Length: 390
Image (cartoon, rainbow, N blue to C red):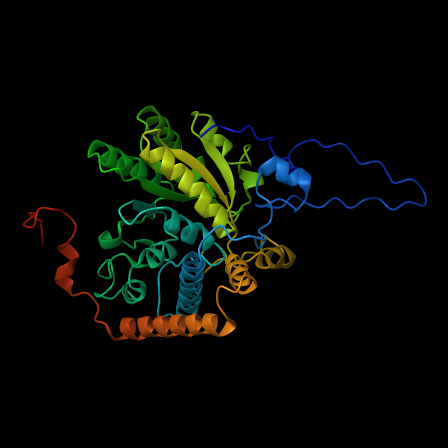
């Protein structure tokens, strides 16, 4: 894929830098109000589109994908949303404990990628990891039981919210160390290339992880060995609670990949069609032996970093602006506008998902906790590892 040069968007002002004092407006005239830069996506104007290539999501006039694809996207994203809304409620009731990082608002980042890849490709991400396995086909029962720390969970109740795994759908986790999944994703890609499987690995990270040195080591090796990896940064603007503009000199994060001559591009990840197309292009390159791609998914989470984060670092107006671009509502509008389904059809899907989520809660509540002997299992491949026990 040919690299397209994109003009960098203007950086946000930084209070630590010297700035000139603005001139007073002439008498009788009102000074213009300067809108602060959007933390993730640009304003919907031509200059911003040229700067970042990621305009606001809109309902397409013509359909690029099939009816089945749109209905699958709608069902997958609704399942992610309703499952996590329920998880948030249960966390508030202290039925789910420990850490809990919700994905609400970012569903298109997963749904569009699933439709662009094959069931044999591998997936790895950080600790915001409920949505990915749900879209890949892991049972909601197994994920909810894991959040409850029950033995019937997909990690046998030992991993909790941050360590979801499911080998059956090639989901390699859920990792709690910031940025650790990036070199691991490169390693998975190396194994796929070594074994000549024709498969690839898609490795997700948050915008805070791009400051990790391991990312740069992984990028260098992935390009040197032309590994079949799609690196994805889900840039929701705030990492753990501090904006990209305050933590990075490079605010258009996809430029980081270009330092390694890695094909890199921004993606409007509030739009599921754009996500699918970008991932499909990257997958084609990887399968052709041309190596990795770095995609900056410009997205937005509606909740704070974790359930303990009140997200006071952003305004209500900003949050509502992003809610107005909601990816699920965009797909719903497309389906109805193009007569792919009726309101009654979508309501039936919603009711089905509501029942699935409720079933998962009942399953989790009725499941047993792991027994004490599970403590020494699944640590080493060697079944009779000689633990020292007092």
